Amino acid sequence: MNNTSLQELVEKISLDSFGQSFDYNATFNSRLRTTGGRYDLRTHNIDINPKMLIEHDEETLRGVIKHELCHYHLHLDNKGYQHRDSDFKRLLTEVAGLKFAPLSIPTHRYGYVCIECNQLYVRKRRINLGKYVCSKCHGKLKLQKEIVYK
Ligand SMILES: [Zn+2]
Ligand SMILES: [Zn+2]
Image (cartoon, rainbow, N blue to C red; front, top):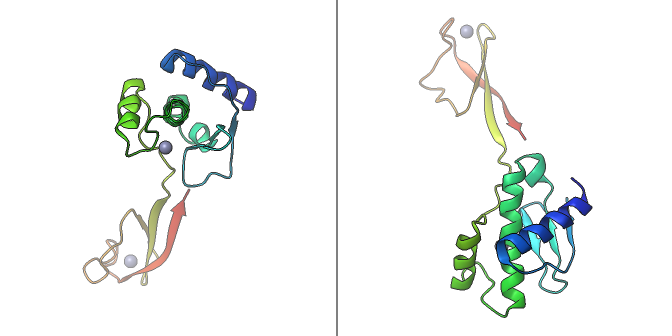
Protein backbone atom coordinates (compact mmCIF):
# COMPACT_ATOMS: atom_id res chain seq x y z
CA MET A 1 0.00 0.00 0.00
CA ASN A 2 1.33 3.43 -0.90
CA ASN A 3 0.07 7.00 -0.47
CA THR A 4 -2.20 6.71 -3.50
CA SER A 5 -3.96 3.61 -2.24
CA LEU A 6 -4.12 5.12 1.26
CA GLN A 7 -5.84 8.18 -0.19
CA GLU A 8 -8.34 5.94 -2.00
CA LEU A 9 -8.97 3.92 1.15
CA VAL A 10 -9.61 7.05 3.26
CA GLU A 11 -11.96 8.45 0.61
CA LYS A 12 -13.83 5.14 0.45
CA ILE A 13 -14.17 4.79 4.23
CA SER A 14 -15.34 8.40 4.41
CA LEU A 15 -18.14 7.73 1.93
CA ASP A 16 -19.06 4.28 3.27
CA SER A 17 -19.02 5.05 7.01
CA PHE A 18 -19.68 8.78 7.18
CA GLY A 19 -21.72 9.36 4.00
CA GLN A 20 -19.55 12.37 3.18
CA SER A 21 -16.49 12.85 1.06
CA PHE A 22 -12.94 13.39 2.24
CA ASP A 23 -11.55 16.22 0.14
CA TYR A 24 -8.03 16.66 1.44
CA ASN A 25 -4.84 14.61 1.53
CA ALA A 26 -4.10 11.43 3.41
CA THR A 27 -0.45 10.36 3.56
CA PHE A 28 1.75 7.94 5.43
CA ASN A 29 4.03 9.79 7.81
CA SER A 30 6.78 7.75 9.41
CA ARG A 31 7.74 10.65 11.68
CA LEU A 32 4.65 10.00 13.80
CA ARG A 33 5.99 8.20 16.83
CA THR A 34 3.51 8.29 19.63
CA THR A 35 0.30 8.15 17.67
CA GLY A 36 -1.31 6.05 14.97
CA GLY A 37 -2.58 8.99 13.02
CA ARG A 38 -3.07 12.72 13.06
CA TYR A 39 -5.65 15.14 11.76
CA ASP A 40 -4.30 18.61 11.04
CA LEU A 41 -6.81 21.31 12.02
CA ARG A 42 -5.14 23.85 9.76
CA THR A 43 -4.69 21.92 6.51
CA HIS A 44 -7.46 19.31 7.09
CA ASN A 45 -5.03 16.64 5.98
CA ILE A 46 -4.69 13.27 7.65
CA ASP A 47 -1.38 11.62 8.44
CA ILE A 48 -1.20 7.92 9.13
CA ASN A 49 1.62 6.13 10.93
CA PRO A 50 2.82 3.36 8.57
CA LYS A 51 3.43 1.19 11.63
CA MET A 52 -0.32 0.64 11.80
CA LEU A 53 0.04 -1.44 8.68
CA ILE A 54 3.53 -2.82 9.17
CA GLU A 55 3.12 -3.96 12.76
CA HIS A 56 -0.60 -4.45 12.87
CA ASP A 57 -3.06 -5.19 10.07
CA GLU A 58 -5.46 -3.58 7.66
CA GLU A 59 -8.30 -3.82 10.18
CA THR A 60 -6.26 -1.70 12.62
CA LEU A 61 -5.42 0.72 9.84
CA ARG A 62 -9.12 1.13 9.05
CA GLY A 63 -9.89 1.74 12.71
CA VAL A 64 -7.26 4.47 12.88
CA ILE A 65 -8.54 6.06 9.66
CA LYS A 66 -12.07 6.14 11.09
CA HIS A 67 -10.74 7.78 14.24
CA GLU A 68 -9.04 10.53 12.24
CA LEU A 69 -12.09 10.94 10.01
CA CYS A 70 -14.20 11.55 13.13
CA HIS A 71 -11.94 14.52 13.93
CA TYR A 72 -12.15 15.65 10.31
CA HIS A 73 -15.92 15.53 9.79
CA LEU A 74 -16.83 16.94 13.21
CA HIS A 75 -14.31 19.75 12.83
CA LEU A 76 -15.66 20.75 9.43
CA ASP A 77 -19.24 20.48 10.75
CA ASN A 78 -18.35 22.78 13.67
CA LYS A 79 -19.14 20.07 16.17
CA GLY A 80 -17.17 18.80 19.14
CA TYR A 81 -14.18 17.22 17.44
CA GLN A 82 -11.98 16.64 20.48
CA HIS A 83 -11.58 13.34 22.32
CA ARG A 84 -13.47 14.58 25.37
CA ASP A 85 -16.44 15.90 23.36
CA SER A 86 -19.64 13.87 23.38
CA ASP A 87 -20.06 14.39 19.62
CA PHE A 88 -16.70 12.76 19.09
CA LYS A 89 -17.41 9.85 21.41
CA ARG A 90 -20.80 9.22 19.82
CA LEU A 91 -19.55 9.31 16.23
CA LEU A 92 -16.55 7.14 17.04
CA THR A 93 -18.84 4.49 18.49
CA GLU A 94 -21.20 4.75 15.53
CA VAL A 95 -18.53 4.09 12.94
CA ALA A 96 -16.65 1.63 15.19
CA GLY A 97 -13.43 3.57 15.04
CA LEU A 98 -10.51 2.84 17.31
CA LYS A 99 -10.35 4.84 20.51
CA PHE A 100 -6.61 4.62 20.69
CA ALA A 101 -4.19 3.59 18.04
CA PRO A 102 -2.30 0.54 19.21
CA LEU A 103 1.35 1.34 19.61
CA SER A 104 4.11 -1.12 19.33
CA ILE A 105 5.03 -2.01 22.84
CA PRO A 106 8.64 -3.08 23.21
CA THR A 107 8.92 -6.48 24.82
CA HIS A 108 11.33 -6.73 27.67
CA ARG A 109 13.29 -9.83 28.48
CA TYR A 110 15.81 -10.24 31.22
CA GLY A 111 18.83 -12.39 30.74
CA TYR A 112 20.37 -14.04 33.80
CA VAL A 113 23.45 -16.15 33.99
CA CYS A 114 24.57 -18.55 36.67
CA ILE A 115 27.89 -17.49 38.15
CA GLU A 116 28.86 -21.11 38.75
CA CYS A 117 27.92 -22.97 35.56
CA ASN A 118 27.12 -20.14 33.14
CA GLN A 119 23.65 -21.45 32.41
CA LEU A 120 21.62 -18.67 30.77
CA TYR A 121 18.03 -17.91 31.73
CA VAL A 122 15.76 -15.55 29.83
CA ARG A 123 12.70 -14.36 31.67
CA LYS A 124 9.86 -11.93 31.04
CA ARG A 125 10.10 -10.56 34.54
CA ARG A 126 12.85 -9.68 36.88
CA ILE A 127 13.91 -12.50 39.12
CA ASN A 128 14.32 -11.96 42.83
CA LEU A 129 17.98 -12.87 43.08
CA GLY A 130 17.75 -13.33 46.81
CA LYS A 131 15.21 -16.10 46.31
CA TYR A 132 16.07 -17.93 43.12
CA VAL A 133 19.17 -19.89 42.24
CA CYS A 134 20.31 -21.86 39.21
CA SER A 135 18.12 -24.92 38.74
CA LYS A 136 21.09 -26.95 37.50
CA CYS A 137 23.73 -26.34 40.10
CA HIS A 138 22.03 -24.10 42.67
CA GLY A 139 24.60 -21.42 42.00
CA LYS A 140 23.78 -17.76 42.31
CA LEU A 141 22.34 -15.92 39.34
CA LYS A 142 23.27 -12.50 38.16
CA LEU A 143 21.54 -10.17 35.76
CA GLN A 144 23.43 -10.26 32.54
CA LYS A 145 21.42 -7.88 30.44
CA GLU A 146 18.07 -6.46 29.73
CA ILE A 147 16.98 -7.38 26.24
CA VAL A 148 14.45 -5.23 24.45
CA TYR A 149 12.71 -6.62 21.39
CA LYS A 150 11.05 -4.02 19.25
ZN1 LIG B 1 -7.65 11.56 17.98
ZN1 LIG C 1 24.40 -23.09 37.62
